[in-house]
Amino acid sequence: MKQWLALVLLTAFVVAGCSDPNAEANKLAVEAKELYDEAAKTTDLQERLEKLQKTRQIFTTITEKYPSADLAVKIVAGEKAAGVSNADLDRAIKRAEMELEREKCWSAPTSSCVPLVAVEKALEKALETARGIEGDRDRSQAFAAIARAQAKAGDVAAVLETAKGVEGDRDRSRAFAAIAEAQAKAGDVAAALETAKGVEGDWDRSRAFAAIARAQAKAGDVAAALETAKGIEDDGQRAWAAWAFAAIARAQAKAGDVAAALETAKGIIFRPTNVYRASAFAAIARAQAKAGKGEDAATTFEIALETAKRIKGDGNRAVAFAAIAKAQAKAGKGEDAATTFEIALETAKRIKDDLGRAYALAVIAEVFTD
Image (cartoon, rainbow, N blue to C red; front, side, top):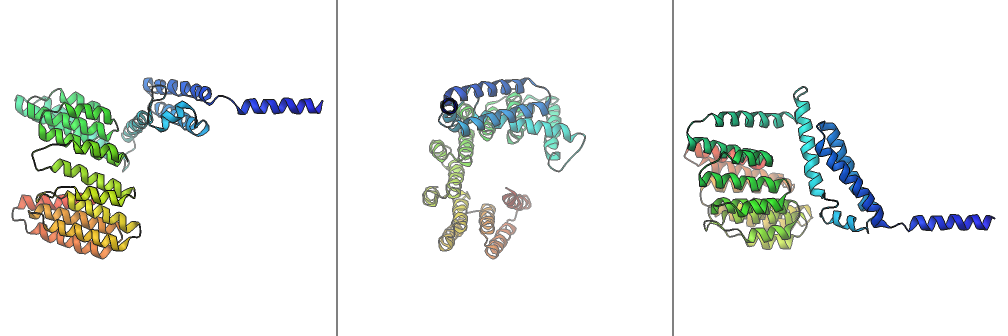
């Protein structure tokens, strides 16, 4: 009798242990999709956030408990599982968190939520003002400026709505470049690429593709970022391409691939009016210092400084020195950073035009807050 019972228990254990991972994962995916769809229909923000977070937990369970299942492989690869991807979830959770924080901020302001509400209120007033402008040209320019601000805030839906009021090729070009940039920042690269392709102005289209490449690099997809950046065309100055490649070099350095980062930085065409080559070398030097390669870091910092010295225009040169000072500080080179920062300030002070000098100093401050 005991032997029979032991056999029954052993058989049950084996059967339980051999359950089909695909079938189990599929059951969980159905539950996740139902929660995700319910969240989209829920007006209660707290409830919506909780449903989205539960969906995320189910995705995690699928990948951890059934890693060999087809759906687990798709989730890890960033593909859609049951019509939902990790990127979709990230965007939905972030949006729900922001909306919930905004809602709470009206009654209990905090240091983190006030900026969000300030942006919302300012844009609301801006739209109200823009709609009352009588001149078509002025109204269009106002809507274009608002679209750019909304894009920077990451509100893709709002940008798309505002862009409908933008008239004139130049203003529309700028507005749709802003849309592409917002989509890229939100993680929807496919939509951003499609939007960027439709931007008519060469300069704005180049900016849009550069912003997408930077977003891809920041997300760790260096290969895709390189592919996007290689297709950038502009007015011959290659300013936007340099902007993109500098971000890619930083991403490569941060990931520990210093050799590739150096190759990318060396490939940035030096122009006497842009700071990107110098800032790229500074970022690489910072990575080398953090990796314990002090001598290599010192050499790369020297390359960055020499590149900055070659930049024409006190304003641009001052900003380049500021970027290097920031990298030196992050690398633990406090004294060097202080010295380079003083050079940046002295360079900016040589700008004769008051407006130009104020602008350069403001950008230097912005470098250290970025």
